[in-house]
Image (cartoon, rainbow, N blue to C red):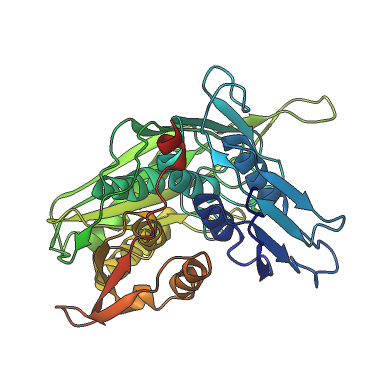
Length: 398
């Protein structure tokens, strides 16, 4: 007699929605989320970017069921097996093409980072192209980082867990946030071809010293002089601290978006931004990301200085991981083999609402609690995480 399906874990509100859906998919526990913007008088229920993420989950998994109430304020998700870009499950020629809606206000990193967490546990390689009028490759006012920061600050973290082969993020067409922060008509491709049975157990307790700073200054649809002005302003802040600084300048034309009334296409996604990463002698990465607001009015010099100061602030928080990469590192540690992994983190990083909420969610999904003790440096703590040993079910079956 087959065992009854597990009862869903119950949550309320849209907070940490994507994080909970990812943990549900990794652990196989169904989730029931209610009161999603139930108090909003104008737009209750799931937003367009959240529905788009659910469709992406349905595409890269096999056997998932998604039930949404009539008002969109209640969601029941029963996860299936992560199969990646397998033919017949939404992929054409081994590539999934995912269209983002035109009213999307979130950057493409909103979809990329969760997909990168699922990809190592997939049955087959993941190859997804994000296209459509809603793709924003730059940083957004909603708090999303740019696709450049995902490539330079998030993907290198997987190497610590023995996941480093056939991983690539290609920005096929750049775009900044459009009017009112909606849409951008960019295009990004994620290739994640390294699947593992279990991530390695890590012990990172030496932040090291910063040895170099790298970055990308980008602009779409405007003069390239804006890049030079951002780079000069950023170097003016960083040069007193370190000499090894190289910031690449990327200039591209703004994408054109066809109109629905049949008139000529309009230019969208005009703007500029800067992404910076600092790497230490022990391969610890800190990052910062700033883009021009959709309404404009902010000079490139302010963007460059603001990004440089953000990078210095990220370094000053200490630890072996920044606040940007901490959720990825802690999630992979919890999903690894049943051994104790250790990670040194700054108190200003582990004390954020996002990390505390992640720890609580991991406990609810069956992971063990974290052990925390003072680190060797002032202001740092060492977090001990015992892996759950879930691993890649698809590879075990194959």
